[in-house]
Image (cartoon, rainbow, N blue to C red; front, side, top):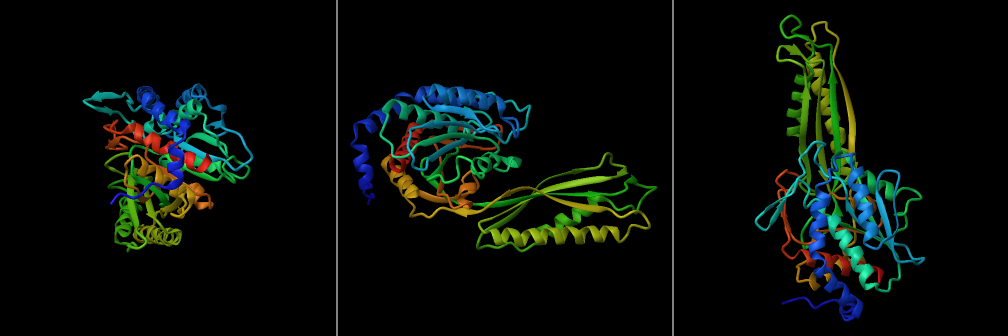
Length: 399
């Protein structure tokens, strides 16, 4: 049996300005897709989002937002509405996972658009602009202002730096009523749990040498190989779910040389901060034991040394499923025919969640696949419905 619509939403849907906004979102669909493609084709590698950020600022101004500007780290901000109430923040992230030099050309493949970042988060950025235009066209009455933000540093080693800056002491996010992140495609998922993660780079340095003449010199790659083998034997919690993955490693200069340096990067994820702390200690202990094993056979050579750097630390968090922001997203999802699904993920919402600010992450309509690959694709199947869902979610909390 279908769930009845929220009575507040029913009242909202009957308002003339909401009807205008919903109609406009569908009429505006062509422009939304064009901007999605345009923004995706502006490179935005980690720590290199400036060009896309500048274009995003221009489009935010064109969409009717006021006080558009860029902050110290590169976030692009624009406001809609006035009032003394704490703002509701709506965001999408500007950066992608793809390094500088990646071909970001978007091509058509049947009813799909294919290109790196076309969904994550080209779709979110285009939806953010479409939402701004819907507010400018319908001009609904609001009880609190809405702050639209394109954030930097959501992906990889960016370590959520844009969201962190937004919620810094004295930042516009401090004291916000809530935070909505538009991230990728989809019409059903509502992320209410922030999956915590910690990322490490382990570096081993030694004297190095010739593979024959200097045999017995502590080998950094051997040490890290032992360490990685030990990591795979660590018992990981099933509840709360916890994972460990080695992502990258490198070192050495030649096949017939003992390396002077080698490094490995790994990530642990968990829904529990104490579990992340426990694994942190065990990873360090395992690496020290591996290094000691290699140094035992140093044969008089200078021992190798280990350095452990934390290169990313995303806090875990959760938004109460009964919070009005979550209930609004659930009601809005049902209003466009979606079946709400509460989920856990690692997104910009981790930062406000960890600080006690209600936050959710939702898709911006359509279908997508192969995220974080150069063959990432987006299909605009019910794409406008996702933007309507976002509009209704925001209006239920700010209107």
